[in-house]
Length: 150
Picture 1: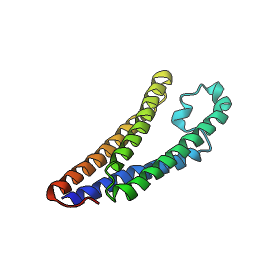
Picture 2: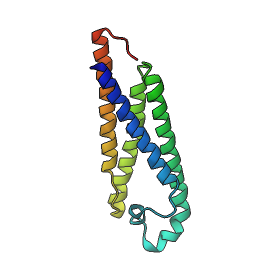
Picture 3: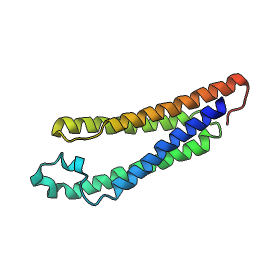
Picture 4: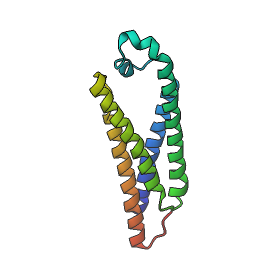
C-alpha cells in the first residue's frame, strides 16, 4: 500500500509543479492584457498600465516557473530518496504561493469587480494537500510495516 501512496504523492505534486511551470510560461509571455485583468482597469487607463502590467506578468511568470522547478526537483530528488522534510517543504511553499494568490484575487474582485478565479488556488491547494497526506500515510505505512522509506 505504501508504494501506491508514494506514487500518488509524487504524481500529484508533479501535476502541481507542471501546472506552475505552464502557468509561469503563459504569464511571462503574454502580449496583451488578459481579459480578466483588463476588466479590473478603467478603460482610459489601459494604455498607461501596460508597461507595469507586462513587467509584473514577467515577474509572476518567472517566479511561478522557478517555484514549479524547485518543487519538481525536491519531489523527484530528496522526497523520493526519503528526506523527511521534503514533502512538508514543497507543500508549505506551494500553500504560501496559493494563499497569497487567492487572497490577491479575492481583493481584486472586491475592489474592481474583475472576474478573477480565486478558486483555482483552492483547487491547487487541495491537490497539494492530497499529495502531502498521501506521502505522510505512505511514510507511516512503510514504517509500521518495517519497510525502509525511499
